[in-house]
Length: 216
Image (cartoon, rainbow, N blue to C red):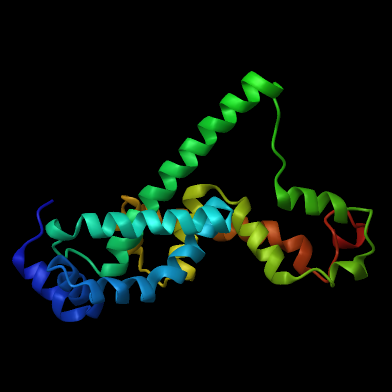
């Protein structure tokens, strides 16, 4: 879909980061450095949740900024800069996850035979169930448990939730990033939040595990 001049002018007027990107289009190195400074840690944070590894997230963030720089001459603002940036990030992360999944399939089928990789939240749940006194669950860092629960969501739910919760993007902006309709994003987020609540419930209800008779 072509970006009209009126749309480009509107986002240029509203978004200072769009104006920085337009300077990048004109080969302003300082403007590019400023965008990297503003978004690098935010980008790494989202990517780390998606690919479950800081080193890989940092590598992918570099790939995202490289794509931004390569695309600079054709840049025309049709959205907020953050929406455009996270659209690129979503594509980069999706490609990386597909490639990793293919490599795992090859490794498992040709080297080790059929295997099922454990879910870290399931492993924590198993450790807690009947083996750990309820009072000890209080010692687990809630932030770590929440992170594990987010990682247990599927890729699409996790991406939508991260963009909504941590980046504050609207349904329409998330829809643009993920190439979905706003209604589909609303449904995706509803499922993500419901699944997250179900995953977290055993840990948040007075430290009891799901198999604890008192948790029923």
